[in-house]
Every structure is written in structure tokens, then in C-alpha cells.
Length: 631
Image (cartoon, rainbow, N blue to C red; front, side):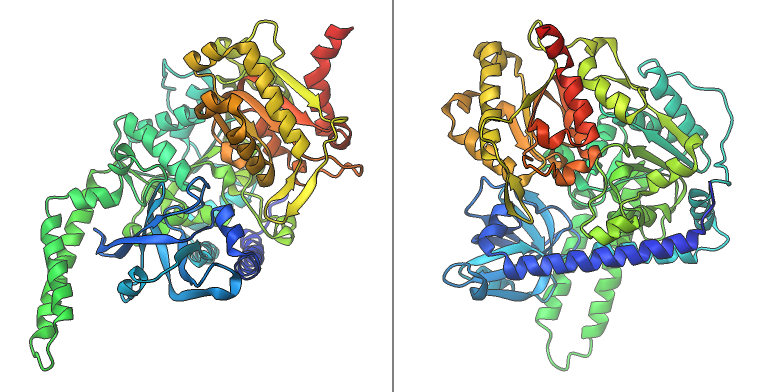
């Protein structure tokens, strides 16, 4: 394997990231200018009309305003902590030419159902917002994340004769070997052998280690154990992930384990348990906070009532500011001093609260879903790096086709797996799926190395049932329709058949058993239009009314990290050219087929899909037993 010049490779990354930045900015401009507000509301990218609630300064001294969604409450939205937003006024309806945008950008601080708190600049005319008829809010273009990523790449390229430059050269150079410590292995009675080996290898790694966790193999359990053991040797670690949801998930597991976590940023699922370990809540709960709040209030009053010719004004302001800063520093240092784990998103690692902080170990979860540039943001703060994830599941999202072709989608984790296979520990025992559901994924993606634990090997719902079936939708009049760039395709007949198949299967199991055992179902489609259509159908169909809480319908991305007893997948594509579009990204299909614990039903047009070898093999594998029985 040839070594490549890391600086040149990172320069290339930067060029590709600039292409992605331009493509995303342009897509956003088009979205704002050409797609009607009605479509944005349907996509969950805007709320209109909204009702404003109170405005106040939060514990971090940021001006905040509360807003409530008053319509379309059943639409899943895309607002979450840290995302930038723009306010607009819709005059007599919301067609494009009657929208007036306010000249500032806010940031989402907190979302709970249909209530959202937005942080706005200090000089925002809040009264105007509160008195605006037809006020709306929509997602804005995220400049900040890109700035952080560009900055991180620049710093990594400039790094010289330090730990960062060493890690950079190591990650890119297959001739350099990652260093390790040597000591006796520790045994963990509640882990399996491959999980135990992974934890020991994390502890021995001086530079880098990868925990490769295929579906259902207990990656999070292993990671929590590795973090816990690392904390026996270090006072504090940094734990990051690409998305807020992934950070929440690992933080919650660490808190359950009794480890003090300080979460920078607000969680996506708002409940007391999750909120209790956020920096903001801890800050407010500190005994010195009321005093700080009083000083800040006095400062605002002083500024508001400033009299002309008041000679002592500056003196008073400076004195109060110095006292406030002193208190703030004291509270911060206490909160960070008590925490053993600091948890945030990759971009969140650039937060001013973490400025100048260094960590012995950085753990990056779901590392296979993160752009390389984003990973470098926290890597700059660490001596060694542990990555966990699965590069055979969902890749990072890249909007620019040219940037994707240029290699922007290649993650830091993939790069290290390629250059240093000796630093990879594969978890091999899965605890989720019936053996037959798992076997295809194991053979195709993991060289047949993943095996099922005895406890799940033969799990099933009905006796003599086929755990995996593919129903060919040819001959039912199914056809795909193109809905538009952002929603993709829909296949109405296939959607109807999907629910008809589920209804038949439910009748076989019986209502009482489904409700008593809470047998849950996931209906997956790669296309958003199909997902929305299926959701509408389930709502209208009286048969499914008693089971609504047990059925979730979503895209493949929406099901990442989840599992259900029964999974149905509607593949949608049906055309004479054998065109399957982004179904060619097989990692997505790996996620889809490995969500099922006991029953997997795939619905798709055999002729269209089996032109691709993967789907041909999957079709044969799914129907092999059925054909054998018919013979």
C-alpha cells in the first residue's frame, strides 16, 4: 500500500468540502426561492403560523424566545439543538412573493414537541416578533458547521512536530504502525469474548483503535465498558458523535452506568433524565447561579437606564462585568471538574466552553457516519483516538455528486481501517436477529464472520414460519412515480400491498397476542414520498387502529440504530430499464434488512431489482426455502 502525502490529501479534502458547501448553499437557496412554503411545511423544514411565548435571558446569558407550532402538528420536523433558523412574516397566506424575512438568524436551543426555544442576537427587536401576525420560522443554511470544519482542516495541515501532526501522519501512512502498551488482559464476565478483546485493545492502544460493530453486536455496551475502564486510568474523557441523537444515546448509557456526564448542548429527546446532565441545567442548578443572575440583571438595567454625562457609568459596568466573569469561571470550573465524561457532537467540540481543553482519550461513536473534516475538530484536543461504528452501514450524507465522486464520502474511520487493519477489533456475536435474517448480511458484508448468539438463533413469531421472504410485486399493476428531487419516488400499489401483507400477518398472529406481547413493527422505505404515503394509509385504515403505537414507518436513515420484531421493506423501484437509483448504495440496504428480530418481508419488483447482483442474491436467498418446499 502506497503512502500518500497527508497534507496534499487534506488539501483535496478541503476542495471537496468547498464543493459540498457550495452545493448545499445552492440547494438551500433553491429550496427557499423555488419550493413553496407549503412544501417546506410538509417536509418539516418550517413552522407556520407560530405563536410566540415569553422572551428571556437563559442561564448562558443568551436572549431567547419561545415559540409554539399551531398547525401541522402531526408532521415530523427537522428542528433540533444547534440548527440555525430564520423568522419570516407571511402576509395573507404563504406564497413565495408574500414572505418577508427578518434580518437576523437565530439558533435552536431546545425543542420539545411543538414548543421550541430559539436564541436570538442581543439587539433583536423581540417585541416586533411577538406582535407580528402570520409569523413563521424555517431552517436556515448552516454556515457555522462548515466554518468549524474548514478551520479544523487548516489547523491539521499546519500542525508540525506535535501530537496532532503525529496522528495525522499515522492515519494516512500505512508504513507507520500504531503504538500499543502491553499488559495482561482483563476479564469481563458480562461481555462475550470479542467484546472483551475489543475493550482490552482499547486500553492497550497508545494512538488509535477501532471498534467495528456490525448490527446487533453490542457496540454501545462495549464502548460504555471501554469508557468506564479508561476512566480507571484517566480523570476525564471526551465522547463525541456526528448527531445529537447519537450523543444522547451514549450519554444516557453512561449515566445509567453511574458515570458523571456533562452534555454540551441540549438533547433531542427532552425528558428530565436527559436534561439533568446538560451543561445548561447544571449551570442553573449551581448555588452561585442566583448571584450571577442578579449581577447580569443589574448590568442590563444599568445599560437600559444609562444617563447622559454619568461619569461613573463605565466604572460600574466594568466592576459588574468583572464580578460576573469571575463567578462564571468559578461555576464552569466546578462543573467541568466534577464531570468524568464531556459529551458533545463533533462540531460541538469547537464550543467556546471547551477552548484550550485537552483530553487523554477521545471516543467517537458512529464514526462511519461522520465526514472526516468533522472528526478532526475534536481530534485536535486528544492524545489518542478510539473510533466506534460500522462502515458497512449508513455513510455520511454528501449532497454534491462531484464531491462524492472525488471521495468526500470516505470517512476517517474507513481510512484507518484501510491503512491499519491491525487497529480494528470486530465484534462477532449478534444478539438481535434470527440466524436466517442475519446470515445474508454476515456473508455479504462481514466475510461470514458474524454469528448469532444461541439466545436469538431460532427466534420467531409463528411456528414453521419463514424468517425472511421477498414478495415480488410484478403483476399487481405496481409502478413507480417520480415526485420531485427532495421526496424521490412513490409506488402506490406497492404501498397498498405492503399494508395488506401486514394485515394478513397480524391476523395469523392474533390481536390479543400482538397487544399482550407488544409485538412491534417497522415499515421501511428508502423514499420519503413512500414513507409519507404509507403513514397516511395506516392512519386511514381502521384495521390498524388498535396497533398504531406498535407500528413505526420511516426511511432507512430514520431506523438507524433501531430494531423491531417485524420489518417490512417497500423498495418502490419498478421500471423496464432496471434503474434502481440510490438503492445501489448497499450499505443502506444492510441497515434496512438488519432491523428485524424475527420476521423480514421485502416487497419489490424482482425484474427491476435483480438486474443488480446484490438484489439477485438477496432474492434467491429469501426465496430459496420457499422454492425448496414447493418442490
